[in-house]
Amino acid sequence: MQPETRYAKSGTVSVAYQVVGSGDVDLVLVPGFVSHVEVAWEEPRLARLLTRLASFSRLIVFDKRGTGMSDPVPAPPSMDERMNDIGAVMDAAGSSRAAIFGISEGGTLSLLFGATHPDRANALVLYGSWARRVSGPDYPFGPSEEQLGEVVAGMERAWASGEWWDGGRPSEFDDARHRRWWARYLRMAASPAMAQNVIRMNIRLDVRDVLPKIDLPTLILHRTGDTWIDVGHARYLAEHIPDATYVELPGADHRPWLGDVDAIADEIEVFLTGRKSRPRRRTSIGLEALSRREREVAALASRGETATEIASHLYLSKRTVESHLVSIYAKLGVQSKSELIRRGPELGI
Image (cartoon, rainbow, N blue to C red; front, side, top):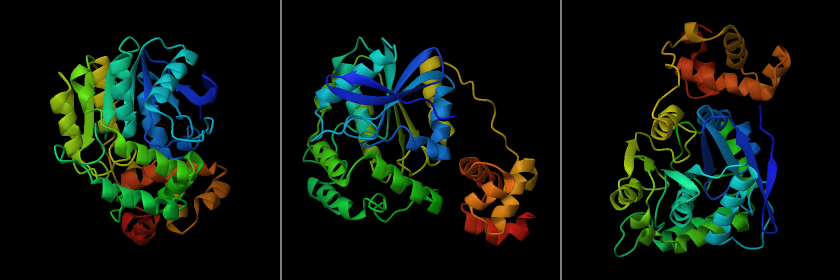
């Protein structure tokens, strides 16, 4: 079930947040450049990542000011304001100290928060992150300022569809249903102008001088083939943060909920708790691996019925049907509904 959305007061700004789970470890998730704490739960794979993190922690998620359900602001907030927002959310959630998990630019913010407020952070986890967004004479990673500027210029034209994101390199997991949700997520998370201004602010960020000052246990996770943030950024972080733990994961998706979610969550759980509580993953595949309900959903989907139509026939919610379809695709080894329809007879459906 989607958790309750609450508001923390950071100065005069209201910051939307949610608390999920009841583990011994408080884990604050600092999102990438835009987010929406409620629309996030509409995507089964992202919901699964959040649920997996909440299985071993008290997970605190929030929308940065100017994005999602937090108060709009006239201009991109400063990093100091964003750090204040993290503290305000922690106060509202009753967390005096927490592990800080930053995704993409959220990792950069997490580094600054950990260095500035070591009394409030007991560990840092960075995924797909960076210390400097663009390349330079002494930093060969990432696009040039001009190249990223071109991406920003094209965002307004394609923001409504989300098509600006992949740069012509779509993910194998990014099917039509996910693309529709992703476009809606972006539209709900921020206006095109705010999103552009946030990335323009990122172009100017360089926190390399902070790295040697990090005196917290730090886990750095990065997918080797990440098409949005080059893996060289993570290797640089690992070389310059004292005693950092660096784990390179297979895959090319920057968005952590696409691809192997468990590989990410397992590394974080072991790092923060010293154990892995996730039960052994089911290894059976094929038609026999489907539950009775999944067989019913698969049969209707293979005939071309939409999630809404299946939900009506089986008296389920559309979201439940979509969750079943994600599981069905994984168990049958198909990537999309069209493949399910095409291979239905072969698979015995």
